[in-house]
Length: 204
Image 1 (tube, rainbow, N blue to C red):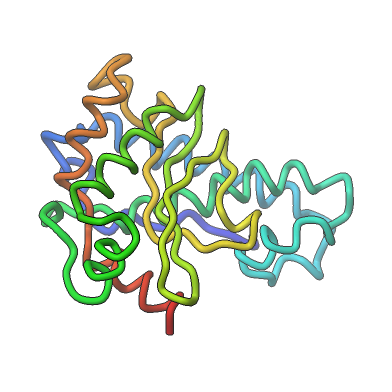
Image 2 (cartoon, helix red, strand yellow):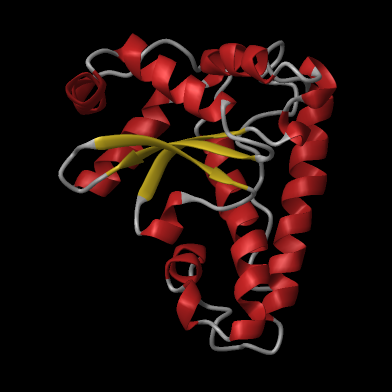
């Protein structure tokens, strides 16, 4: 197998009460596993591609055989997006970023609260299933964006450092149709140390 499902970095119930155990089990063990399995199936018979990183596959999508571009985009995106999602949450999360990331947020958005407002409104406003993102550029500037389905900023040559899943499977069992309430609670589990590490990797 080219790709394997990564373990959660915490227990299924570790993010309660903000994200419930049942949602985490289904989200990780069923949805993320499904994307992983279908990505591997798409790469069967393409031995030259099975050693590529997921980042290389997604950024080089147009160079893949035409018949696997869509399955890799959808399922490779689902694999990558969820792998990032688990790591930018923590039972010890919440609060505010510090250091270089905090400065970049203030420079780009004016304040942390202004950033939160923009990020949350963008994620909440994504029509249908999708993701909300904080993207970092090599010059240290930041950008808030969203993508439909399992697309992500890599497809546009950008690197996300924080992402939130706004597919209904991410929150519906606990929050039903209240996407905004889910996002309100999600800030309590954001792992700013991990986001800072992602930022440092992009900016060097």
